[in-house]
Image 1 (cartoon, helix red, strand yellow):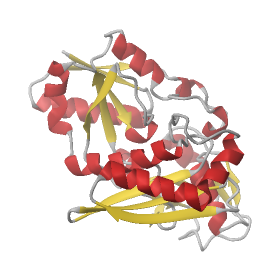
Image 2 (spheres, helix red, strand yellow):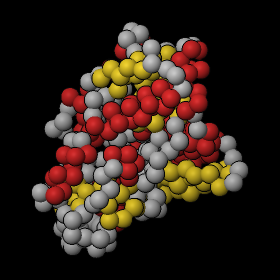
Image 3 (cartoon, helix red, strand yellow):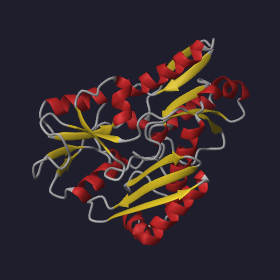
Image 4 (spheres, one colour):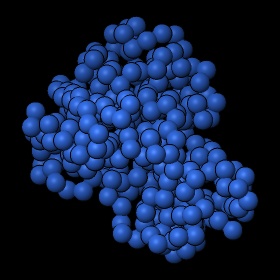
Length: 311
């Protein structure tokens, strides 16, 4: 029996059940254990204001360590770039669309929004890029599961909201998507659209059972993005976006660091063949071009600290 640890949100359970179904097809018995995380308990505060490291993974990792579960299914974007030696990422699944989606009842695009339009997001990464493009917009907090966020849009609390395309596709809730935002407009979160299968280090049995889920192309692009985030030492309080894609044998990485109010946005584009090296090199370039000052202003410290999770 393989026991999967998962958050209890609608999307997290879809993800856990998707992995469970794949394992059952291969003859495994599977059970899902729902674990409430710190991030699930804090629902009335913007994630960027919480600043808790591993807020969506800590309790699940504790269950792994205590052997209450055998594997965890995470949204890769929630998994810190540095994980404890007790754990390993056994697989990174094939990536769904990594981009962000623009949703609205009355407006077709971000440029088409009227002045002072109310746009919902609790991600500083999205907020900063929105305000860099449209400083006139009123960017308002938006928490809750996908259904809750869509209901708030339908009720007229917002003129538009920005959500990850991957979650909407997985849940079959694409009806309000007006456009998919390209990475040069809205650079996605590190690892967005991919799932990570986390196990205890040295658990060869579970590793062997889940290795078929590992997608080499996704692992390469995700490793590149995570190397960049690790280099920057950024997390919840600093808007950082990264999007890597394969082009033949080469990787192309687009990355963004910005001030939360959108007053300064640094974008870097580089290519390379080694995912980790490309991520580090691009991160260093961002730091040289002003990212260090942005990070220092926000954190008030050096940029070498381990990175908490990226919202």
